[in-house]
Length: 516
Image 1: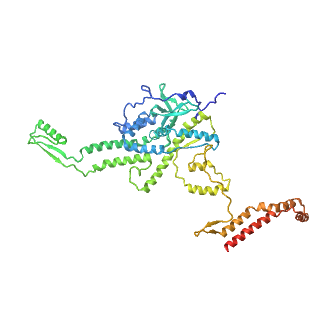
Image 2: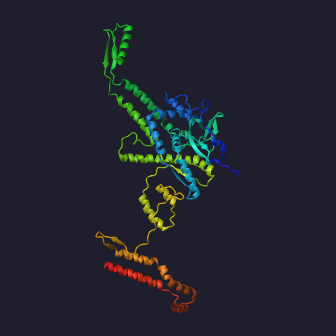
Image 3: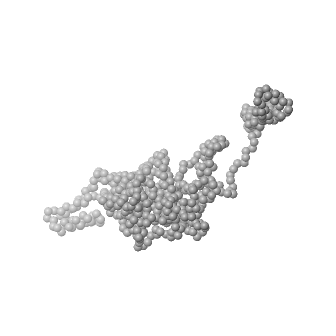
C-alpha cells in the first residue's frame, strides 16, 4: 500500500529525500558567506543610518542586519536589555498538552515531550528569539532517520542575511541561492523553523527592536565619543604661550613645541623673552553633567523599547515598584513565549508528528508560558464542592494542567486515598480528660438524615402494592374494596418499616440518655 502524501501547513507536498540534506548551509565563496565583509556601525552618520533603514524596508536588509548584529556587540546596555528579554523566555520550562485524553493522543504527546526535553531544544528557543532584535530568525532542522522514527538531531541557526522576503507581500521568507540571488527560492517544507515576532503590525523586517533602537544607539555612540574627548582635557589648565613683537618664526615654533610638551612631558625650554601662562579651566558650564545625562537618557529609551520599562534596569526602585514593573515584563515575556511556542508547534511539532504518526485531526501543543503560582488550596476547596455535584463537566486533564501534573502512564503507581469507611453511628471526640464526648444535637441530625436517605427502600413494600391497585381500579369504590382485600391478603410488607422505626427509636433513646 503506497504511503499517503504529506503536506505542510501551506499545502505543499513533502519530498522526504529533501529532508535528509542541508539547504541553507554557508559556503566560503557563494552568496551565503558567513563573513560580514565590513562594518556598518563604524563611522555611522544620520544620513547613512537613514539609507540603511530605508533599504531594509524596501527589501534589501543586508546592511540593516549587520548593523543589528553590531549594536549587540558594541553597546553593553542594549546587549544587556535584549539578552534579558531573550533569556526571560528561554528560561521558561515548556509544557506539552495532549490533544485529548485518548490513549493515542497521550502517546503522541509523550513523544513530543521527549523531543522538547532533548538537550538541543533550549538552544533552538534561544536562536529563534534572535528574531526579537532583527525581525526574524530561521533555524534549519537536521533530521535523522537511522532508527524507526524521524528525529531532529540538530537545529542549525542560519544567518538571516541568507534570506529575503518575497516582493509581493513582504511576509514570506525565501532562501537565497546561486540561481536565485535576488528573489530567492521558497523554503523547503518541514526543513525550516522560521520565527517572525509580531511586535507591531506591518512587514516583519520593520518590526525588529534594532530598528526601534537604532537612532538612540547612534546618538549614544556620538555622546560617548564626545565624552571621551572632553574627559581627555577636562580639568587640565589651559596653556597659553606669549611671545614679544620681536619674535621670529623660529621663536614662535619653539614656543609651540614648549606648550605641547607641557601637556605630555610636563617640561619645556624657551627663551627669556617668552612665557607660558596657565589658566584654570572653567567648571561652571555643565560639561561634566551633560554627557552622562544624555547617555543615561538614551539608555532609558532603549530600556523602554526592549523591556517596556526602566525601573528594573536604569532607575532605583523599592520592592513594591519593582514588583509592579515585573508584572509588566511578565506580560511581554508571556507574549513572546506564546509566539515562539506557536512557531514551534507549526514548524516542528506538526512535521514531527506527521512524519512519525501520520496526519492528525488535532495535535499536541507545546506551551511556553510562565503562569502565576496556582493557589492549590483554593482550587482543592472548589473541586471538593463541585465534583460531588456531578455533571459539572470538569475534565481530569484540565485539573492536571492547572496543578502542573502530567497525565499518568500505563502501569504507573498512582497516589490515592482508600475508600472512606461508612459513617459511625455516633459523632465521638476525645476531650482533654481522655473520656469520650458526644455531640447529641449533631447525632440527632445524622440519625434523621440516615432515615431520610433510606425512605424509598423502606416504604416501597408498603407503597408499591397500593400504587399498583390504584392503577388497576376504575372507581373509588373499587379501590376502597381492593384496599381492604389487600390488607387482609398480606401483600403489604411492613417488616422493613417496623425494623427501621425500632432502630431509630433505640438510637434516639440512647442519645437522649447521653444528653440527660
